[in-house]
Length: 124
Image 1 (cartoon, rainbow, N blue to C red):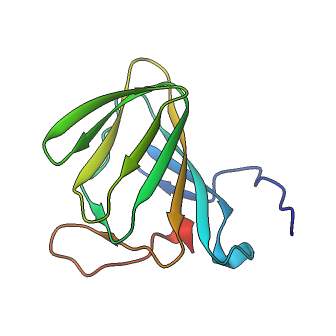
Image 2: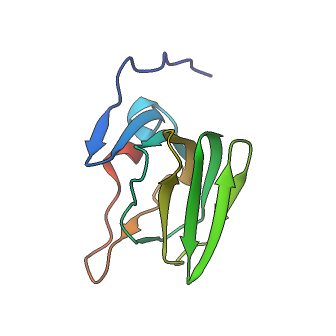
């Protein structure tokens, strides 16, 4: 067992999105990578898929998940399970930040378009 203090600032940034690594192989988690994602109001992520199932727990704000042609509204308390190899993206809806806790098995990789699979840096 180990306890790791939450980082004071997000550990990774992309335009419109901030990621805070919480439990990853770098911090000693051997099975599951966990991070927080925060999307600015109105921000839409990039469509991608993952080699493993990913789970999102919405902590605050509202959003929309677009999975394989279907749109699903999300709000605080909702849990979204994205099957492996399913194209999806998240977008923040409303005037608040969309904040979710994300869980991905260690070794899971993202795939964007025809690019080679890669491990997101916040999951390393």
